Image (cartoon, rainbow, N blue to C red; front, side, top):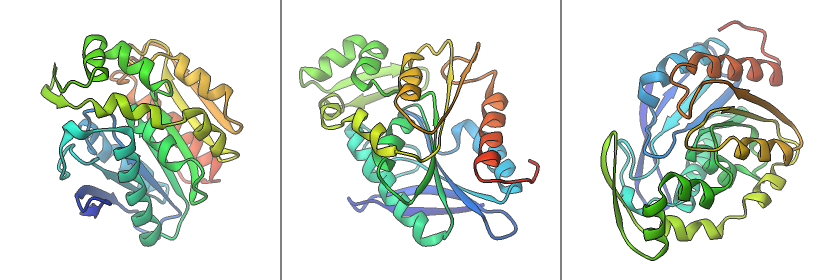
Length: 255
């Protein structure tokens, strides 16, 4: 495991960790965390990366600006800012690793994967865990009063199970700059894996079904009794992901 940093277009350093297999990697998976998340995914990234390394797959996980150990102000979060961060990471990854690059995003990180990766021919495949495509609808349902305040131009302070955080009105305003349908069309024939919970309490399953119906080369799994965070079904999600990677990239090793 290697700790490193990647500089984004604003000159901010994005904290990253890289896991490489013993032999030369055949593939690189770039992992994007969700809203209020971090590159370690609650510590789960280490076991998941080890399983991927056993298949000869390298892993790069990073913190978006303003999150985790990265520089920047979380209050300035937008989909555009996260997409720009991811594009900087993709550039870094393609320079360092001369192998196919797969983007994996969880929740808002999955939305970022779509926004940043669609149309980029360097991306070999996409993995979307619990990902919203209906951005305004999802955030309005998740934070109803707060979202209305942001739409009216206010800075808001939100409290959750991890503490309090501040968000600016630009998060809501920025969604209008993104044609999510256009991004889906731009994916074209690149393989996409969608894994979503039937009972996702934050990102409605209709998001996943809509993406499935508007992508050409898609594998779709709707998992029962998993919830948004897959707390009791983490291994199920990882098993489905690894099986798909082995199938798509013709990997015969065991993990």
